[in-house]
Length: 407
Image (cartoon, rainbow, N blue to C red):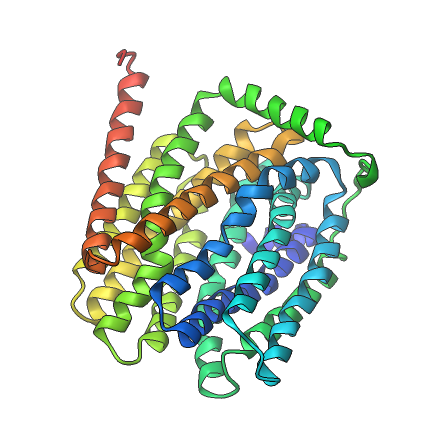
């Protein structure tokens, strides 16, 4: 199935190759920001602060990025952004070698990198339906998610090699190179797009009206509304324990925490690749109940991690999470592509991103405070149980409504 699709659609091949190479760099950079923040400050609060800089730009500019993605030529837009991101990371490398690298440099560059992401990501997601047929969509989404999440296998392996040889700082060097290669691959994607609006002619009022049009549309689409509500809750419960809590919990239980953390991410990525490649053979059309089932599995993995007392328990928890998380992601993307009009896809994916990052920020802010007086393992357990219970509740509500039973 997959080889036939890629031979038939070379633009999809280049699109996926660009996604893979740039996400490899993103994985490395994400680890570098966490590792360097901890090395410079040895503070869980400061590590959480770096993670927060990956969230705030989307809250401020994410919706605007979605509107612009609907208006501009997407491929050219993405190439320009990739070319602008590379020099920022090389500045951090330079500061490191002249002994000027400070915590606030990490904060500033992380913020700017993810600010660019506000404008890149909606265009990236909205580009896929333009270069694929509807019959190819499930397999293409599976490949995209496999490539995106699968870089969590290669990235951590390379990170271990870098840690043992040239150092964490060159995670940034690699990411800068991946941005340039990604731009070259995107240039090979064949796509005829309208010229789009001139940036100079875009006014705030027109952006506001475009967002209001999407709000009116969303108000009348029950499936997407409920999808967004459950997604926000689940991501809120998941973000801190996954992005920050897991690394801190490992620091409490073992000496080589960073290396083992990278290994765990590799196991997670390997399982994700297997699940993503298998899904199109089992599921042809995603539904809202499938999304709820996947969230139940996802939360169960968090529960297992909270109860882990050694490496085997951590591996089992990561594998269970890796069964549910990619399935939920594919279901969400499929439902958005199915129900959101093509001329609003940028806004649909940007709204989804803003929702996710708002949940992320609330999670980081609340759980960082809770972690000062509640054991991290207890936060894991509570979050996992709530993810499972809320998903079961919404699943029951969905079936009750499907049977015509009024609330």
